[in-house]
Image (cartoon, rainbow, N blue to C red; front, side, top):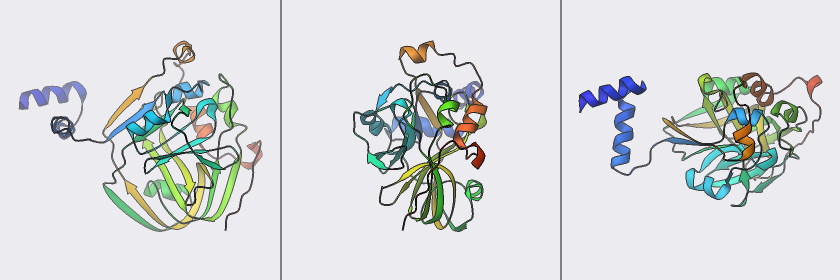
Length: 266
């Protein structure tokens, strides 16, 4: 048995303890940390926005995650088993089971440890400390507008409304992925925010705040469902999408913003 473990380790480069844990979880019929993803970041960059999986199916795969909706119609925030759509005007609605998504990443979230941050001056500080939760002095967000199929992500992101919320409580949901998955997933941090009262939210571009509680979970397995649509099958997905993803995911200087909106919350 040890020889078989070593052979598998050489073939896959997985740590032996990962192989053992996955095997035991499967044998004992226990769930283990798995990331389920619909489509690829490369397809999103090329403008493949047709819905591939509905929210009902995503609920079966995880209770925590992010993504977007058919036609790039806003931002998805999933937490505690509930899926929300943040529209391009920053308003929020709870998603219906039949709503479709062209790109989403979900998992069953069970924090392995938590970190308390007394004061968080900006997003870079949070990124150094890692992931998600609670009272913020301000947040800088965006939500994508519904976009026609085939419009590249860079062009769609150039016309994204941005919002500033002040003195607000809420939660961040997101993932960190290594650089080597750039043709499949979005490398680095990808964070979405939703207010405590579920009235506003969006893709996180910046923040400052205090009293943050961060829950961390390491995910050791990833499964990707590729769309069977004609648009996906015919798309040229060989380009490196890193530059376009960096542009679409990060805050832009004021002079580059096509549209913006300021929102204050009590």
